[in-house]
Image 1 (tube, rainbow, N blue to C red):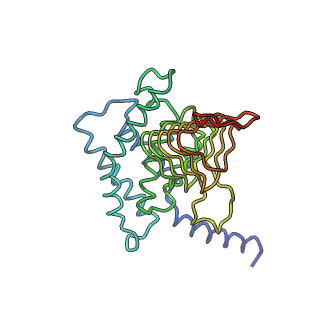
Image 2 (image 1 turned 180 degrees about the vertical axis):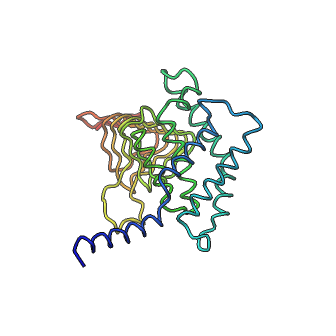
Image 3 (image 1 turned 90 degrees about the vertical axis):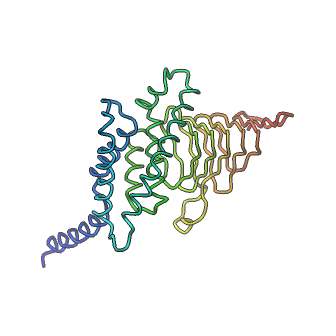
Length: 271
């Protein structure tokens, strides 16, 4: 067999195996777009009587996507679809709270609707909440396709396995990274360029907690990097811009990036 023919045979077999284990990208994004439009219509108002039909079609589309690459004898596809849409009302209300928090803290926002219709940070959070629910239901591959699509379009990279409370605010969106084992509490705000990452990247650490925990009511300002699975940002803390943290911060702390270290009676820390 000619070398080129052998390469083509190997390539075809590899592509066949990978194609069979992967949902089609365009189908996945079409489903995501229709789901977002169902919850937050922007270009048109759905007639009240059509909502049930739109929802049913979206359910069928998700089922067909899962059937295209998963074996129903091994994966409970019907149960996954039912559980996902059973969670949809709760996801919607969480997202409305996310949008309200963005509006509350952004003086440039004129309405909650403007946030929903145009803010990339809100869109990134919405896709995360869809993808995270699918991850909880142990759906492979599809959640990452959704999250990477949002990453590409918003500049925000949120792993769908991360745990993020409600409400959650992302301002300006660009350059944010939130790792797979990050845990973020309720009422947290982060700004552009923030990284919640790992101290060490090694495949053997895949099952360990590698990313930080951010407790309730924390604000992390622009370009700050927080690394490590044992690093905890205590509740009610404020982390200033351009801070680099690999150690935990006590609750109620204020951490700022200066060239000196001082601790005063207000537990204000500068580094």
